[in-house]
Image (cartoon, rainbow, N blue to C red; front, side, top):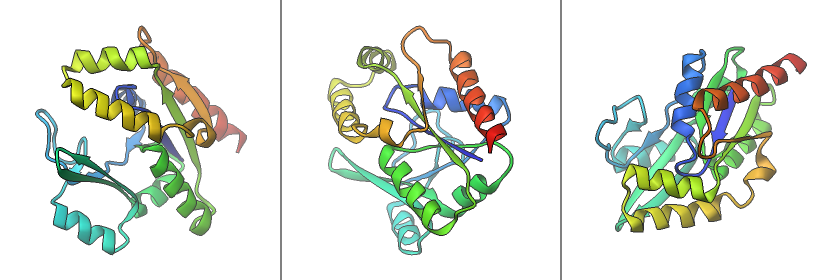
Amino acid sequence: MLTIIMGKACSGKNAVVDELKKSGFKQIVTYTSRPRRRGEKDGREYHYISQEEFADKMKSGFFAETKSYNVGGKEWWYGSPVDEIVDASRDDKNNVIILTPKGVSDVLSILNKHFSDCKTKVIYLYANQSTISKRFKQRKDKNDTIQRRMDADNRDFRYATDIANHIVYNNDGENIENVAKRIIKHVSRNKQTE
């Protein structure tokens, strides 16, 4: 089964996925053409590839979904490999991926159209605006970056509740282990009823 986590910037997606991996979930690592940030490792946060490699993979149908962001005049691409998504959603074990709402819609469209035996659960990891603002400041992001990310997320997540199977809250003061346990409980309960 594939658990899809979607959430705005600073909602705690990566921290939750790290907790899920401690409980045996396997993460699908997505691809990006953006440069690595300090402390990131190729194959852990993302597969970092060049703009040209990304374009070649797009043309070949390698990705189930892609998204680009214009950052300071540079275009950064992100994408998820279709074969890994299909394999993970057919697997009896727990798998997880982080996607945007558009990415979720694109992936579900492909799976529903071509792979009816796939199992997915979409979790919307929700954090309120004050929590997100506080976490951005703790990360020491620049004000223009914070505003750009929050504006984009407010547009991109307008219909997130419509495509989610379940909403899990991760506001200020939440214990990340407990947040992950709530996701595991929801996924386990749904696996038992299928």
